[in-house]
Length: 215
Image 1: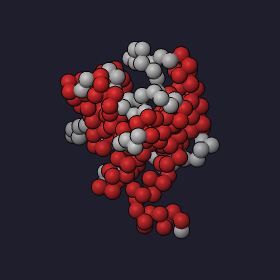
Image 2: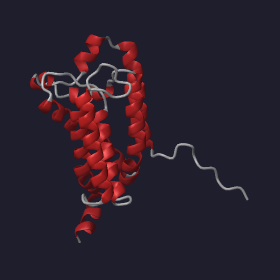
Image 3: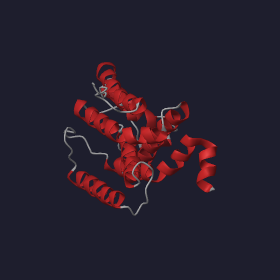
Image 4: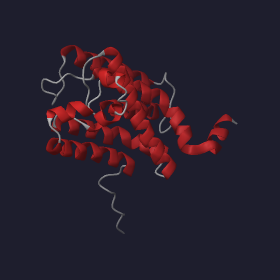
């Protein structure tokens, strides 16, 4: 008796969609946008001060080169998979996943503006880092948000912060060339995901799950 074939890509479609959006948006960027156009849609503290808050999200669709885009896409698929699976693929869960990704990306941008005012930021790294933070809590709880004191959460958090501080200090990451590494967005996005996964998990499950958790 033949066993059913397993799909090659066993990932929830919201995680796949985010991954594909990163790749497709950079493909469009490389064809349609000049350097001036990229700078217009990039995030910066100046844009935020000018009321252009939307750049917190448009900047997530832009990348420096194919290596930058593919690296973020790979991380989004790897770490977005457990987060999307936890939220579920019903409409409510998909909406919560999208909001989680966008909000952690926005927090990453705000952290970048705070620590590096006057410079431009592009890339989905803040939102992707949020997925890493959320997935880390899920790893610590084996599928549900685990305690902050769990071994996976502590070890991953220390490693993530140390790695990004080193990248920021030497200002180098594979595929980035001479571009500045947005380590600030990586760290702030990660901690946003680490702390917000509980709240968004309750939102994904609705009022009944919240009452069960409280009761």
